[in-house]
Image (cartoon, rainbow, N blue to C red; front, side, top):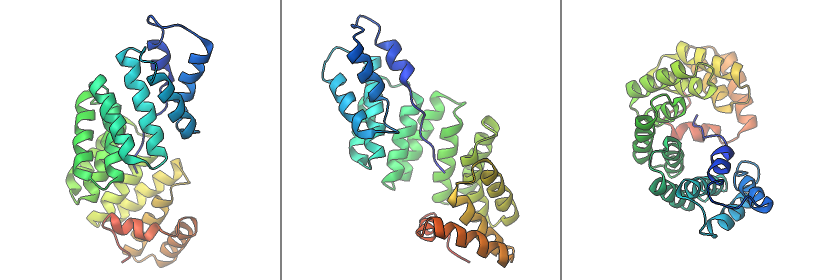
Length: 243
């Protein structure tokens, strides 16, 4: 499972204080621009208004493009998101998480090698970035580069031991390696941390099938398919089919 970066309102507010008027309406626009998780349409409009003033320093402009890119991606407008991530990187090329999120956008297009290149850069800029290790693990797993994937997931979990997404990703790696008991253990851990992970539920069901535990397999896979009827097709795109 892949992850986005959380909201970054502080950087925008801090950057905005340098030589720019502190008008209440402008501060509200800044906060709205960072609301891409809850209201992407409002974020897009607010970010555009701030970008249109031409009065922001490059560091703030980069954050505004980043926020708008996340809003576009939230709406499924991946090409627009990538365009804004490109502009953010041009203005602030040392921000690891802009590369991380552009990698996620490339993932959405199925361009896994380009996504991995972005995760490489994100990790180069911030070697302690557990999210990018997890995201790169996921893509390596999809591409069948399972030893590389396993190394990345292990690093992600070392950096962030309570990361349910990394356990989910490593569960997929173990599943594809045929290490079913280890897959079950990781999916168990992921579901303890986040019971809403449908992929972990289905993946655990597949692993139970491989160890001939049919009752548990049927339980997990049926429950997952009730939540997400397309889950089997998603796993097929990961290179995993029902045994």
